[in-house]
Length: 114
Length: 117
Image 1 (cartoon, each protein chain N blue to C red):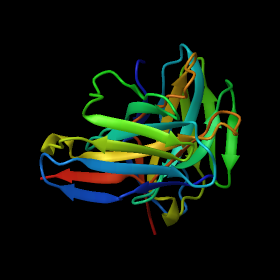
Image 2: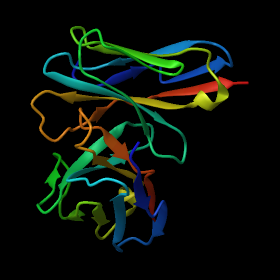
Image 3: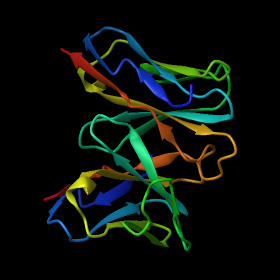
């Protein structure tokens, strides 16, 4: 994988459903992976920064895992609520980059229906 | 988390004019800021890295004379789109790197929607 790719592009779930989506990134020369949550007309909000293979991070109902050897990360949302509706972006930083250049995926647009 | 503001949020201008967009870190100092552009249905694309007190570093394919970046203080970076044309219409968003955090978290502004008529 040469670029950062996210799937699915969009997702519609019902309130209370749990959901997950994927971020694939180049596994060679990896330094860090960021997840952001971006609501319309607001600034992207940093959710997680992950660096170590096997990392698992949690923030409330949202959690993320990281596999640096195969180059993927999953974001999970448990018991989705309408306020979770947003675009979820992942971005990787390759190793050796001194200025923290982020390469973004296209995002997964999540819509949670009441 | 830290707060980054961006101004204006929306601007409409005539072709040939220049537009300045400001990015401010409100509660931390940012020696490095980044400018991104988002095309419709595409991901955020890094345009340039703005370094306080020195010249910006532009990504391949980004015209430095078209997109002037100034980072005159630790809390302010500006992007000026010079002689704007309709193809410059886009969503521009900045981020500021908080070097106090362990893995250099970047905090984003809300973005600026530029429309060139």
